[in-house]
Length: 182
Image (cartoon, rainbow, N blue to C red; front, top):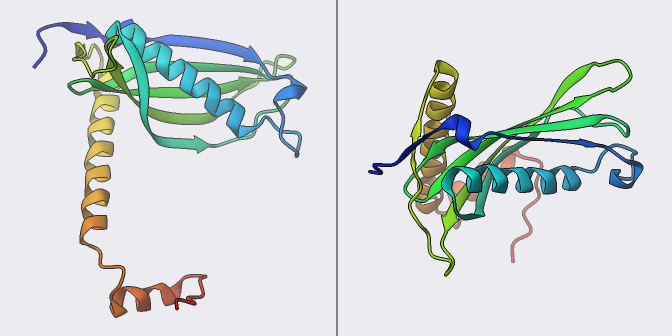
């Protein structure tokens, strides 16, 4: 266990950017890939600020696109470290879009990035422990623990599933799939 601890507040980062026509997809909404790029940048900033080290993205556990973002809206992303392991951190990010003419704000995205702290040689390094200062931070920490447990259960299930068995193949009949295996 780490003897060095930092509060969640030391990882908080917020960025705002006006959405331009150059950020759109073919339907005229802001391209999800552009939002993912911004999410990765703010996750890096939050994790690096907290750990004091260069950080890399290990995984993106969840990206929920809840509402489309329009050209001309001001997008604000708020990130903080929700959980720390030995060298890893889970960064939670909330994305809101504001109609700058009306002031209406909508929650557009929630994301969870697992970041790993690295030294100058690219080796994983320990990160500080996390000081939880309020019940919301405790809730986010517990939610991250549950996320990790579920991910481990899925990985274990995949190891135990025999995709070559007749029973497994037969179980696919209830889905919109046609098996043409030779």
